[in-house]
Image (cartoon, rainbow, N blue to C red; front, side, top):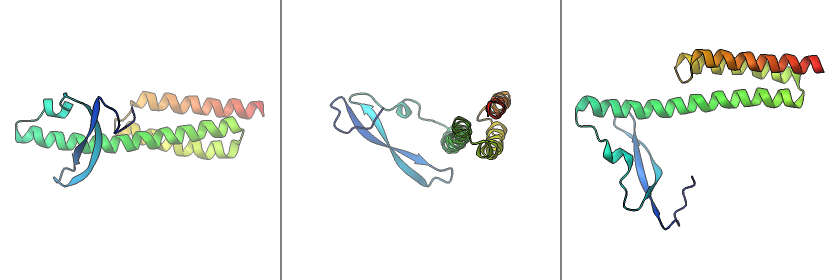
Length: 133
């Protein structure tokens, strides 16, 4: 969904994102239908521990999103190298992708079996491409 400010049925509301220290990280634009409160307004924490948990979850969500993005980019680069027929680049990118997949699995961004399955499929694709060449 794009953040078009000229949509008549929605308005853009800044959604503050705070670090665990309480410092404002950034105001992220958030499209809200007119007459509807943001989802965060419906689930405001009441206790101090719940407020802290909300701050922690937000920081972790942003960190996990970066880890997942880096992992997907590494996998994509391997697939592009295999499609281009560049075996040396595919091998070097595969080693980097394995590292990114293992890091994502260690942080529980993805399941460790999913990481191993992806590594196996990438390795099989590289071997198939090298056998065809």
